[in-house]
Length: 447
Ligand code: CMC
Image (tube, rainbow, N blue to C red; front, side, top):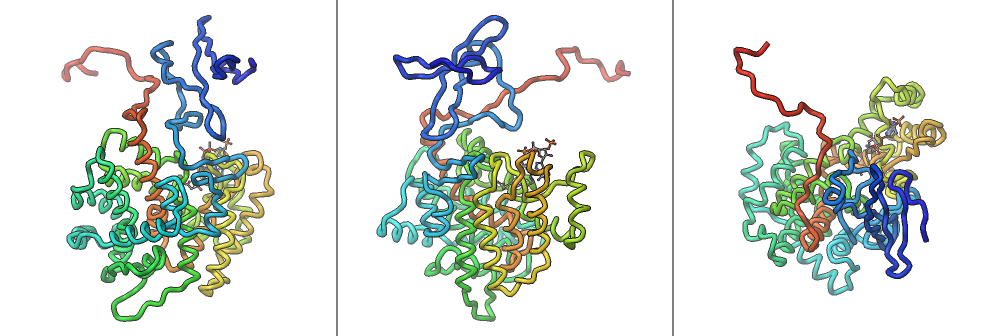
């Protein structure tokens, strides 16, 4: 069944006997065949791993826009249709019917737990929520005004210095202990980072609470008052964690995989992921989106702002809009929008002046040719900032919350990579455009 696969790649042929597909690359009159692999769903991939050996050439794909870096069974995204599946289950169903720890189990083990497995898993996570007491002293070394993400990068990396007994990546038992430790302890560190930034005492975890309630309590309880969990907020936070738990081979996950590919310990790899997540084009977008709404200030100023976004000479972007993979409404954004309204109502912030700005901005952008042509739709971060603000979190904590949720995704992807027999150290190549070989000139002779 010969057919055109891609103009530049050449012919895409299928061998009727073996049922295997291949792609042919023709360069300078010579042809090279490469296997085409099919996944369970989604576009095929051309396996060009032998390209350099056969043709002496590399591929060039800055930003990896057309490059698959690994085989994975964890998360599937159809960006055109706006579909997100964890282990095959639609994000909408998981967010509506499940809880975050169930999602963690699913991502880590591949299947939803039965009742006994769920109870056992919840117990295993909650048993590890405390961090070494010396961590509290480690925190004292940070400046009072340190960004909590800086504290997270350092403190999660520092876990490797506290838990030597789970850093042997070749031992499956140690890998699992490290995984459980991180799912359990990253929220504790995140809450400590918050408490430190506001000058309040750290609040120890309380293991009879569910994951989200425990986190809210560690963030907002103070020793001098009783803290009452608000179930609406706990439920919303649990759902926010589910929405952010994994997202295929995004920048921070790829960072975790690359760091892990050298054999680095899992705590160091997750710290690398947190560092990558911090950027405004990735996890920092919710903070940037909220700042943008505040900067716009009023609905009347939106047309002026949109004009700036569309101006080729300005670098202004509509934060919380656009996605490398979604060329349709981000399915997480729809759930987040609904949750945003519920949280605002519950917390008495229904009149938050930023909400009408967000709604109007969304309405204009969805009907404006600039955004339609470029397939720019709201992403998960467009409404998460307003929601988290209403819950009481300062903007500096938004990306930290993302990191808490994404820890399980990073760990699942890292474990999958370690267990993959085809795993190699990540080592991309380059198109070199610098100086060719030249001789050293003594300092006195240089012009
Ligand atoms: N506002 C205005 N124009 C945009 C935007 C935006 N948010 N995003 C993309 N464009 C334009 C861009 O200027 C370009 O136009 P042209 O073709 O005329 O040069 C075109 O759309 C394609 O943009 P791109 O930069 O090539 O797209 P990308 O796939 O490399 O970027 C992105 C994806 C998420 C970095 C980008 O859309 C962006 O910067 N969005 C704002 C930041 C944001 O909300 N990030 C959160 C992503 S979701 C959470 C997560 O997974 O981390």
